[in-house]
Image 1 (cartoon, rainbow, N blue to C red):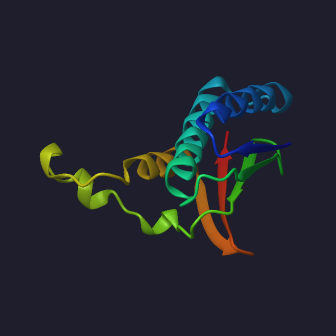
Image 2: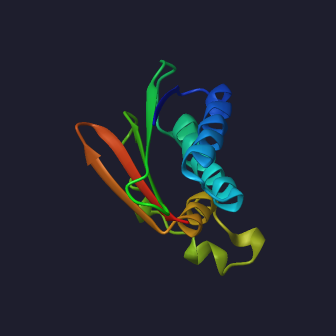
Length: 135
């Protein structure tokens, strides 16, 4: 399955709709669906808020694959500024008192906790994030 979104927050509901359809098609447990939806919402909103320096319309592609029973692979690509989310660590932030924490990084930390594997590459001037989740 493939969905193409515009870099606007009003597109978020399309992610939830796609996830619900995948749950039906691939018998994904509800808990996993909620976690995948949360991870994708976090990544998508980060792209919308931070990836672009202009006010132009951009397309964000999300591909869903079921390579084997009990596994879902999700690829998200955008043409925004290069950003390797794997280099952003919230570990130092988590050990500090709330008032001393820097802004940012906790959403990416959450995404890392919700999937089994996450990869990043920059290819053809696009950010490509690959998520793998077993269920």
